[in-house]
Length: 131
Image (tube, rainbow, N blue to C red; front, side, top):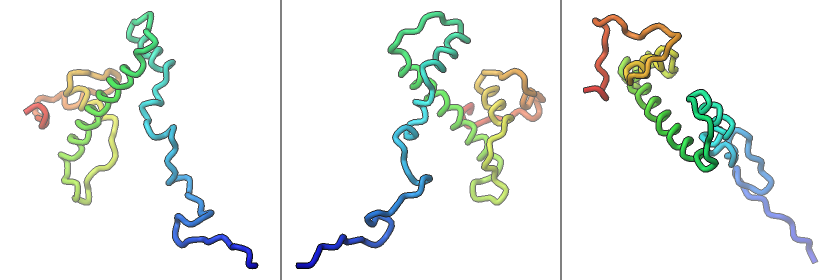
């Protein structure tokens, strides 16, 4: 009687095929907002002048922080895309510190320690979210 031999398929999903590490989805890397740990939230609260923190506030803080970051990043993308169209060969794909300072300045949150972006009145830009 013949001994059954294992059947190996073709392609990347065959039996015994390994997936390279860069294509693997790690469960702990799925949601980056969970990287904001409880001690990090506590340090931010201490800088804001808060003495005591409830234990169930951490998820709420993560949600608020994520919404704020999404808003800032969306506006930074608008600023970058206004320089050149996305299919132009000179379009920028890198966010600089001046982009972040400019967006925070236009949102009314001046970031000190950097040059004031567009402090000259003639270079003042009107952005789409202000029209």
